[in-house]
Every structure is written in structure tokens, then in C-alpha cells.
Image 1 (cartoon, helix red, strand yellow):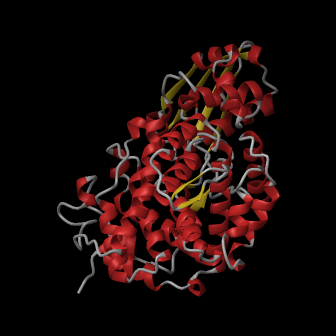
Image 2: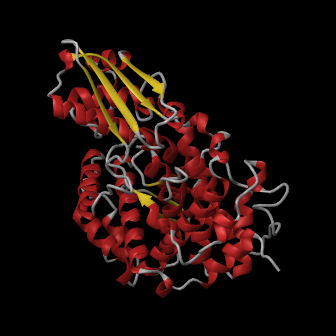
Length: 447
């Protein structure tokens, strides 16, 4: 008898042992968690996080857990929500390239909340985190690309399953109850691409973490879901996309790991913009370009690049998903870091003017993730550079050292004030820790 998708995943999650995970998978789990923590610390004091915290603080229950980079504490569901929006706010989080899911932001907050509340080991936290990302990305594979193409924000819509899977593992749910948790999550999946340049995007990711945790807590108490709630005739996958490719969920499960396809951003912007930045940085470096040299810029790429990045820029949220802004700052400053996507530089006159002289055009032959930048100069030259595998991609990944540098930069940017090196050490030693206390202590800002 063929098992439904939720049952298949439920059995895998419930029976998975730490010893079953290859060392490469364990390491990648730590890298992803480290990257998430850096992103959350960098955003912990940002206005959208503070606003949401102000709302939830008035509603929070009595049993509270930690927030990343802040001294306040909230109930588990609210903490998961806040930590998820913080981890996703800067568009600097990890990316599973096949689906364009940002795996950690919906999953890590649910796992952190439960592990602290139940005083679980670091190994248990890391194991559940990895399993949650695996479930999330495999379900994303099953509905891609049609799901995203219809306008569903896949990090949020699939992230809720990852959070539910992770929470179910930490709650030690049976295979049957884990399957029900996934089915309950299917009824709480939401988030639309139209909201990507707004704070509503982060609400979707926050809800994925909160709702996934809620689904597992309900399943623990006996709530049930339809066996085919994911792939059934009126189930999640068909309601929100095409006929699901369920073999992408089940084939090689526990043997071939999607977490090994995770990547980490060197630039705080949409992943499809990275090739744009690298192409413009190459032109600036190889031709010693100055602002006065540039007449106009043309960026070409596939339809996904244009769909995501050919937009008017009114603020830093737009800038993070703008072809024009990414090209302008890379050419003007030779950098595309946190400063270059901050509000002052988004409104800078030189940046604004070069954005206006930048256009985006379709190249139907361009590989996905690639981009070509062409600059016309004042002395009549036409200079062009194409990047197929940008920095941070699977072909050119960030090293452990570069991830550590990134976390330190984000801690400085967010005004954390704590010891970033303690965080890095705690993450790398997590699987040997009897509890998550050392990690959680390192995430608190100084009093």
C-alpha cells in the first residue's frame, strides 16, 4: 500500500536518529543555523521587529522563551514569530536554489523555542532543525516551479511544514501524530509574492514558524488531519499549484539530503540579484570605472530575474529586490553590503540618478541565476560582463570563515553589543552540548 506524503514524511521524521545523519549534513545544519542567527541579530532592533514585539508583548502567555538578540521574552508561539521575521527581514538568509526557499527562517525559531522550553540538548535541536529543513525543501521540490509562479511565497508556504516537522521531532511525536502535524500545517500555509517588498512578507514567514509549531502542539494533543491533506484532490499542493511531483518528496529520503543544496548570501538582497552585483563589480574592477564614466547600464537575464527585480525603488525594501539598485551601488561603490542597502544610500542622489539610467531586459537564453551587465561609457566604449555562478552559489560557496565574518558584521550592524565569537563557538559545539543554554546565553545582549 502506498503511503500518503504526510505519512511517509511522518515516519521518516519520527524514526530518524542522529547517527543516521552524515557528517556533511550535520555541518551544513550548523552553517545554516549560524547564518540564521546572524541575520536575526542584525535585524533584532529594526523597526518592523520592534513594532511586532510591541503588539505581541501585550498578548503573550506566562511561560516565555528567549528572543534572538533581545532581552525580552515571549511565549513560544510569539517568540517563534518574532525570531522568524528578524531572520528574514534583511533578505540575507540562506537559500535553497532549486525552490528559492529560505529554509532556516521558518524552522529555526520553532526549534529554538521548543528546545529551550523543554530543556533539550543541543544535538536534539540541531537534529530537528535539519529534519525540518529537509521536509520543507522536499515539499518545495514537489510543487516547484508552478507554486511560486502562481504567486505563493514559497518560504512561507513550505516553511510551515518545516516548522511543524521540526517541532514534531522535538516533541517526540509518533509517526502518526507527526503526519497529522504536517496535515494541520497544510491548513495554515500562506504568503504571497506580491508582498515581497513590504513588511507583510515577513508576517508570512513569521506565521510559518508560529503556525508550524502550533500544528505540532495540536497534534500532540490529538488533533488530526486528512491523510492526503498535502497531495489530495483538494489538498494543499493542488489547491496552490499544479499536480504535485510527490516522488520529489519521497525518493532518496534519508539518503540524498536537500540541506546540502543550501547556499548563503554574500549580499543582503534577493538571491537572483547576486549575479547582477558580481557582473557590475567585475566591470568596475577590470575597467577602473568611475561614476563620471558611465552613460547608462543594461542588465539582462531570464524571466525570473525581471519578474523579481525590474521595479521602482521607493525605499530599502524595494532596493533589496531591485536590479537597478544592485547595479548602481556595485558600480558606484564597488560594494553591495548592509550599508549599500540602507535608507540613506537608497535615497542618495548619485545612486538615484544611476538607477534611472539602468534598464533591465529579457535574455531568453540566459541560465537561471545568471546575469549580464553592459555599460556604455562617456568615451564611447561598450563594456560587458556575464556571471553565471555568483559568489555564494553552490559553485562558489561561502566558507565557514566567511560565514563567521558575516555574523560579526551583522552583530555590529544591529548594535548587538554581545560577543559574536561566543555565538560562533556555541553553534559549532552545539551537537555536544547537554542543553541549549550556552547558545541561548550567547544570543542575549549585554544588560
